[in-house]
Image (cartoon, helix red, strand yellow):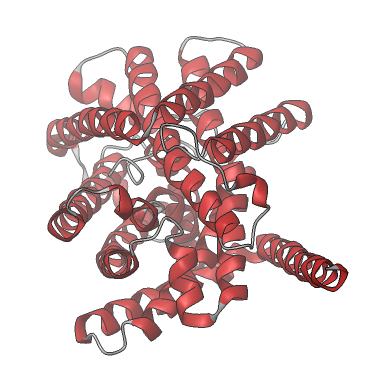
Length: 406
């Protein structure tokens, strides 16, 4: 839940209504339903392999070492940019609420990365406890907001229902993928569980049901109460909704919910992704420099790498004034490709598992159907693929040269 209940709840109500109109609630429902087979599939295979490499190991066992490496690279580039997106998203609402400047916005974004860095370096237990606390608070606030907002929903706010037709619903689905990224993180973290066979599926089902229900109902009341915003980056419908529902100042609500959500998301992804980087290096498809852990069993070099890349991303956004709604499509598109390849790998690996076969096929087909709506951003995974293949070829040539010299 810490990985999935993320920054999407801050920005996506505005962006999705701008893309699809009130029909955005259909997009939220579709992605919520997709979460059931998707999370189940990931959890089943995570329990089978129990490796820090997670999705990369799953794909490698299905389609070979090269494809596993490509998926691992997709994920690493996705997170190398995505955490900065989370930080800018959250900090933009804090600075907007308190009328602070652009410099303050990037200062807050950087502070989110620093807190996640410190907790990740301390160890998984610290990261896990922080995530549990933050996710619980977020869930409580969202459920309270939904309950208090229901009486204020009006049918007039749902007309016209689909002003942009099916393409609008599809475009909203692409954006909403950002809100549902996180189910794959369980594949990297299973080895950290004391009793994975007892706890992983239980945690997965509880998370899927709660997250799906909260997201769909939140979209419904946001649209139904007319607080979905105008689709601009400065629009903060969740803050308005919570202010109306709970009777708290919008600025205070914005600051509190943003800090909790962004810290929780960045914290979980830094912890899980650093373990993927370690596993990729261990398997020889990522630089060996990452194959090192600290005395606390933390892949500290990978943690620092992700911190630095996201800091650089923040710097680029600051210098070139890049907007979040454009930057977010880079990690979203990579994430969709990761899910497509991983779910097709799950189809192969779970073919003899009757339930797993159908859940993985359903997940794969839905992810495949959403991908074309990413349009020009599909060039990003193409470039990452070229870079990965070039590295693997260089690495192979280097090893052959070493052996010949010996």
